[in-house]
Amino acid sequence: MVIRHTAFAEVQQRIKQCFALSATKAGGEGLAIAGKSGTGKTCVLKSFQSNHRPTRGPDGAEIPVLYISVPAKPTVKSHAGAMLAALGEPDWERGTENEKLRRLSILMRIAGTRVMMLDEFQHLYDQGKRQIKFNVVDWIKFLIDETCSTLVVAGLPSCRASSMRTSNWPGAS
Image (cartoon, rainbow, N blue to C red; front, top):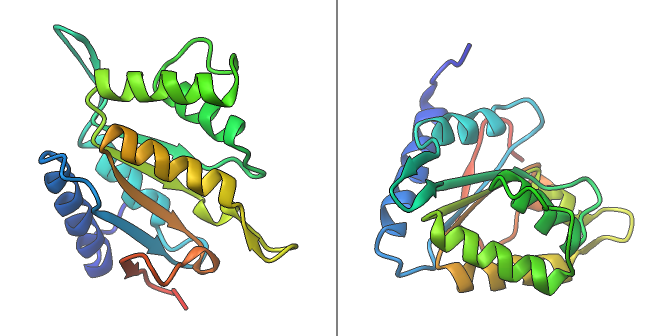
């Protein structure tokens, strides 16, 4: 059961704004949602995605919102594979990083993907080494630039970056 409290509604509204801006393909608009475990970050993302389900159009599948959970130990290849799988690509495990990037870019454009939602974004921060997995982050940025899609990320407070517009979720530190 979803309780649409004030913070939930506020974050939904901010995601709606990002989605609306994505239609202009001007790019650059994004949103980071940070909060403690169990505060509803995944729920708000999936709730928004459920209002923008994939459809079948005359040109094939239309997937306006692509949701994935960042793999626990992400590499460019594993992250790209997760995204291809979410797009319904049957051979999501096949190919090099560059081949997967090319396929993703093409599939996202064909499917009209406007918003890319990455849950568990803290997996891109290696707490043991206290460093960001820059190769994966740079790859994501390149993909966003390539597809003119909008990025919405959600994760624990450890993933919060000062350069991102952040929405404080209940329990966020």
